[in-house]
Length: 281
Image (cartoon, rainbow, N blue to C red):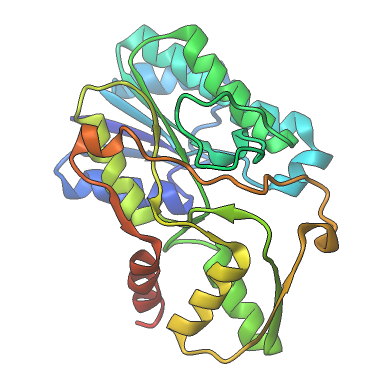
């Protein structure tokens, strides 16, 4: 099978590219300079030239606070981009896998968010991602809409590398303790994406590593697994004074992931241990 990966230069795009290549697929890995997904003509040209059976969209504008200052850019990449890919896939008969986010929810629900819950984003980033989701639903065609959260993994900066750098440079760190979510390892997510794409069970899925924590709890586990002694302080979201509002609870419920691919992703602590081992090589 020929797989076209948009956004192949990011940490998830790299993992997805490696996963499909490892399974023997012919992978067309397109980074930001190779394919501007906001340009419909270029997207159509790429799909028409390569004729992939599967397109995986890992391209995204993920700067949550930056989106508040540049909403047009966020809506172009996160909203118009998926629409363009969906149009091209419909025209060529390709299946589309689109990656979305936990931030489409407002965090007011006391329990986990299921695929049946109504999205109500709090910020521009979440709204732009929701627009991308709605574009897929409007255009139709076979697709997998994969919501995930708190990504970390090889190939680029993420919360793990950032907090480790801060801890080593300063010996102290302050992290919010009132936002709950699910850390997700890109390598585990890529495996699930590949298995989902082979299932033929199109639809919306929530895919994260098992378990949830706060950013403070995540940082504490990172420092512990890295063997780094850091003066770690908890603070509230209000104290951080960030431009974009964040949901207090964005824990995603995985049903019906296991019922579709036969397994759930490992606990996030296990995933973190594997990533820390990679960083220590």
